[in-house]
Length: 311
Ligand code: NCD
Image 1 (cartoon, rainbow, N blue to C red):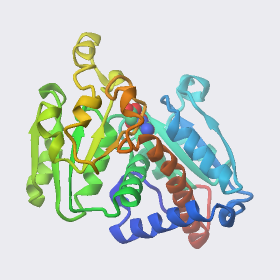
Image 2 (image 1 turned 90 degrees about the horizontal axis):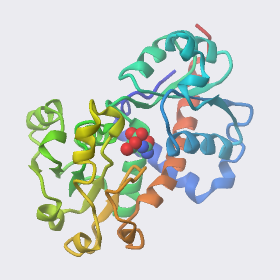
Image 3 (image 1 turned 45 degrees about the horizontal axis):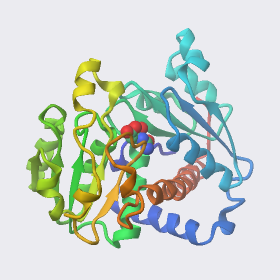
Image 4 (image 1 turned 30 degrees about the horizontal axis):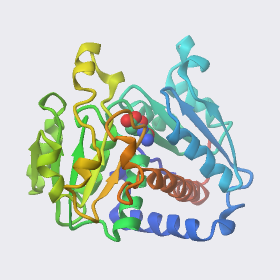
C-alpha cells in the first residue's frame, strides 16, 4: 500500500505513467465512470480549501465512487483534542482512501504511519502540496508539450508557499531547467531549497522586480502572499500587493509564455489578464481533477495488490 506525501514519492517513470493515465481519462471519461464503484474517499481538511477538496471529491464521483469527510477542523473531533493518528485509524474503517490537509507540517505523514488506507497529503502547512504539483506538471506537459528545457519564474510568496516548494522539488529531476525566483527579500525561497539546487548544479537567479525578468520566461508561476502564515498583519499588509501582473507586464513576455497560478488569486494577477490566451490558471484547475482521478486509481490499485487491513 502506498501513500503520497511528497512529489518525489513517485519516480519520473511512475509520474509519466500517471500523466498518461490522466490524459486517457481526459480523452475517454466514460471508460472510467465506474472504475471506483463501491469505494469511498474521505476528505479530512483541517484547513480551508476550495479547489483541492472539491477536485478530490469531483475526481472520486467521476470514477463512480463516493465521498465523505469534513472541511473544517472545528467540525471534527480535532476540536476536542483528538490526534490525527487516532482519527485516521477510525477513518481507515470508514473509507478506502483519504486526502488530508493540515496546518501542521508533517501531520499527514504522522497519519500515514497509523493508517490502514492510502493517505494523500493535500497540503501540510508551508511544507508540501504534492497533488498541486502533479496538477502543475500535468498542465505544463499538456500545454507546453514537455517537462524540461525551459526557464520558469516563480513569483510572490516563495517563503511560505507550499506549492512553490513542492514544484521546485519535483522539477529538479527534469533536464535543463533554469529557475528565476522573483520575490521581495522578506519572502525569499528558503535556504534549504537553494542549497539543494547548488548541490545538484541547477542554475537559478533571485530577483525582486518581475518586469526585469518576465521577457526571459517560458513559464510564470504566480502565487498569493500567504496571509495565514504571517506572524503579524502589518508585514502582510506591506507585502500583499508587491506584485500585480497586468496587461502592461504581459506585453513584455514571450508570445508562448504560460501563466500558471495554483489559485486562489487575490490581487497578484489583474482580472484583465484572464482573457490572454497565455493565462492558463483556470485550465490548470481543471487538469487537477484528471490528475487526482489518476492518482486515486493508482493508489487504490496498490491496496488491491497488497490486500487492505485496518491496523
Ligand atoms: C494553494 C494551497 O492551498 O497551498 N491552493 C491550492 O491548493 N490550489 C495555494 C494557496 O493557497 O495560495
